[in-house]
Image (cartoon, rainbow, N blue to C red; front, side, top):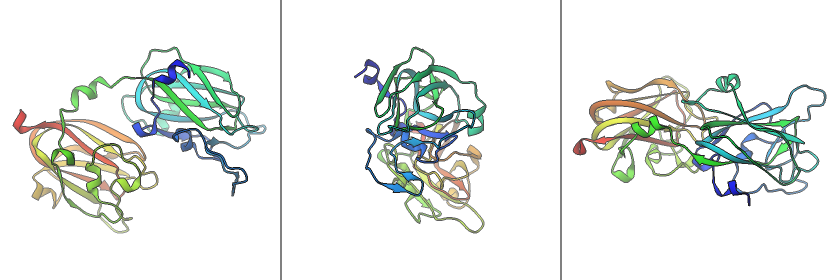
Length: 325
């Protein structure tokens, strides 16, 4: 084991990492790059596009210029000390070379922003061996939030591990806390939801990260007017510093937009509250979102409106109870 492999994987799916873009995933999906464990393989398992691989595989470029790449949002931003580009089970179809670049954002960037970003090379174009782990040390002390894996020119890569030291956003650290007022464990309650067809909004108040789509809130597809929402009575009345809206595992069924308001429980069951914590805005699929939303007014409940519908894994309200002020 390389020394850097003793450090945590900043691209661990369980910490909120995700493969947010790939220019090609014709044979095998980009999301497989972050699957746990080593890649599995069963011979003669064919789908509509050929042998099924537990990894990311692009089509043959032939005479097309350029190279294939995938962009990964790190689950924990931090300093990268080493990468493991694992070509497990890719033998006649692995890329001969790969490189890794990195970028830092102070918000959740759109795909357009990622494609237009200025990337810093942290691993120069390097030779790969097939069907095995390719370990590379990284010497760079900057804090990164995203990495871009490029293969030259095409082929298959089973796993990407990005080992390093997490560095928390100091602005978030200063804003969030000291308590999640919307946690079931702290005494919060779901008091109303417009639609719990597939799974209850109560799941969003659980501790830990969402395990799958069933471990969150999912309503039915809305065909008519209006939008879906749920209301949470906080564990105690208090002021709010920050919000977390996590759409992890909700890919084709995440909300298009989200809004969060506050007020009294009885009022919020009827309509959005007069206190706007988070203005209506676009959210991304399969992504943990963090918002610094300082509000000095003491409130007892919050309402989450999604437009027009869609699922959510977790919802957190960081603030300070009135009794401890």
